[in-house]
Image 1: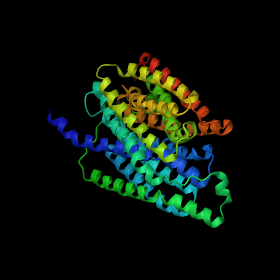
Image 2: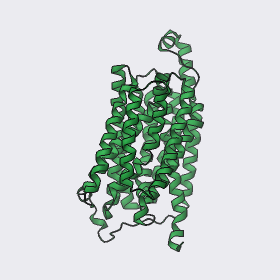
Image 3: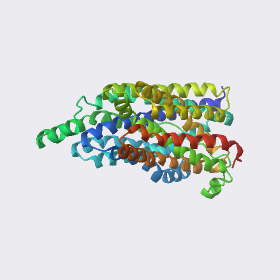
Image 4: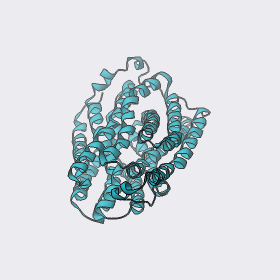
Amino acid sequence: MSSDSKKWIFPFVLVTSLFFFWGFVHNLDPILIPHLRKAFNLSDLQSSLVDSSVFIAYFVMALPAGYIMRKYGYKAGIMLGLILFGIGSILFVPAANSLQYSYFLAALFVIACGLTFLETAANPYVTILGPAETATKRLNFSQSFNGLAAFIAPAFVGPLILSDKNYTQAQIEAMTPAIKNAYIVSEADSVKMPYLILGIIILAVAVIFYFTNMPDVKDEDVDGADGASFGGALKSMRLRWGILAQFFYVGAQVCVGSFFIKMATTSAGIDEDSAAKFLGFFGLAFMLGRFFGTFLMQYINPRKLLIIYTLINIALTVIAITGTGMLVVYSLIAIAFFMSIMFPTIFSMGIDGLGHNTKIGSSLIVMSIVGGAFLPPVLGIISDQTASIQYGYIVPLVCFLVILLFAFNVHKTDKA
C-alpha cells in the first residue's frame, strides 16, 4: 500500500461513517410516519409531509452546500452538515413538548439541511479517493453502511418509538379532551430520547472531524477549477439523465419505505410492532443487496447490473400492487434488496467525467433528491382517493420505469 493511500484510510473510514448516520435518521422516517399519523390523526397525504419536509431541504440547500464546498472545501461542508444534523435532532425535544405536528416537520427540515451538506460532500469525496475505475465500487461499499443503518434503525429503535396503543378513529373521537391530550402527550414523548441521544452523538462526531486532518481533494483540472459552472456541468447529457433518474429513484425508495408499515398492516393484516420488525428486514435486505451488488460489480458492468435489478423491481412492484397477504410484505422486502445499488450507481454514472464541474454536478444530483418530497404525496393522494394503499404503489412502479430508461440510454451519452 502506498504512503498516499495510507494517508486517506482514516478520512475514508470517517466519511464512510457518515453514510451510516444519515441512513440511520432517514430510516426512522418510516417509523415516524405511522407514529405521527396515529398521534395527530393524519391522512396519508398529511403524513407524507414528513418526507416532503425532509427532501425539500435537499432542493433548498444543495446549491449553498456546493458553493460552500467549492469555496472552503469538503471538511467545512461536512462540519456544517453535522452541526445542523445534531441541532435538528435535539429540536425533537421542544417539538414533542409543543404537541404541534408542524414543529416536528420543522425539526426534520433542519436535520435534512445538515444531511444535504453531508451527502453533497461524502458521495463525490468517496468516488475520488482512489482509482477512477473502482469509484462505483467504493461508493457502493460506503453506501452499504447506509444499508446497515436501514436495518438497525427500524429493528432496534423503532420499537422505542412505536407504542402498542392502536386506537381507531372512533375511539379517539370518543375520548374526553383530557384523555385525548394525555394520549397525544404520551405518543409525542416517545420520540424525545432516541433523537436527543442521536443529536448528542452527531455533535460528538463533529468534534472528531474538527480535530482530524482531512486534506481537501482538489479538482482534477486545477487550472480550470475557477471556470466551473452550472452551464458547463449541464452540457453533459450523462449528468442530465442522472438528475432525472435520481429524482425518480429517491421518490421510489421513499414511497416504498415510508408506507411499508401501512402496506404490511392493511395488506397482510399484521400489527404495527410486527410490521416494524419486518421493516427491519427491509433494511437488512437493502444492506445485503448493497454488499452483494458491490461484489457482483467485479464481474458485471454496473450499468448492466442496474438494468437487471430495475427489471426485477418492476416485476416485484406489480406483485406488491396486485398481491395479498404476506406476499406483499415479502415483495417489498425483495424490492429493497434490488433497490440497494441504485442511488450510488446512478450518482457515480451521472458525475462521471465532469472534471472540475464535479462538485457542481454532485450538487445538482443531490438537488434531485427532492423527488422524495414530491412523489410520496402523490402516493398519498392516490391512496386517500382510492382507499387503497396498494394502488398508491403505482408511483414507484413508474419511477422504476424511468430508471430503466436511464440505464438503457446513459451509455449512449458522451462524458462531459
